Picture 1 (cartoon, helix red, strand yellow):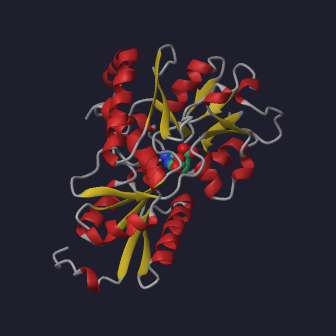
Picture 2: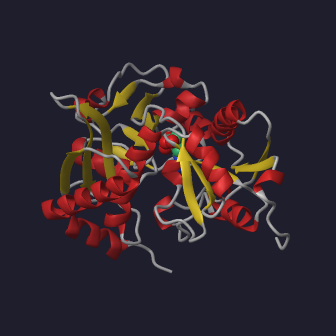
Length: 336
Ligand SMILES: NCc1[nH]cc(CCC(=O)O)c1CC(=O)O
């Protein structure tokens, strides 16, 4: 847009963009609610848009050539000034944003774990109970690789579509799936937590989650001081530190490809009361035969500390053998 930006004092109305899915709308409502509470004098308009990721429901994610499946169209509107905020599932946001865009803040993280959902009528209550040959639905290479490593007797088959579509494919009488794996956050935020069979985490010896999973990311123009200031009052600083550390880890190791990286972040208190961020991480080869793990625990006071944390954890993962696994993934990647 060619119109000159309004002076801060004249801006009373803000446009918030998101995708059309039920989850995107539920998450946007949470952000609008939080903004209205602190800024009752402003008006917030929600605008929805389909993205490339919504339109192409057939190509497996790993074969898609655009890295910004869920974000590109909305970012164009943000950069052009038609939008002031974009609300994303942070997990879907690339670790490198366009140069004039920034992650302005995040809402408090929902449960970040993956969950198992077993087909109705089947008796299984956990991943480890599923009989050999059971078909587990997921389209994520992170989940596929970790399943191949930890549950090699199971079969993995791709399942695409939004949460409702995937559940319908699981429930289909004549469908192939014994169970599917989804993020807890998406189910909980859309009122479908009742479908969860088992929460997966390192304690149950199963999957680590995706970088940013369960967090709602708010993208803004990096020079929009008014909006940034609003988000400093509305966003959750603890979640922000966690996800900045996780995204720095992913950005460091991925080098232009989406890596099968799993993480698990928690805050721990030392005996002397110091609070530290503890992150476990794993990279697994797609066939599950090789992996590298690393953990780090440090005080995080600033965004710079979080960036450094991610960098150091990435170095540890590489020192523990992640390099060849990443090289193999890059070599097999479709390039364009
Ligand atoms: N790419 C799909 C996607 N993006 C965000 C979520 C769920 C919510 C979240 O992880 O924040 C999901 C579905 C899933 O992985 O089960």
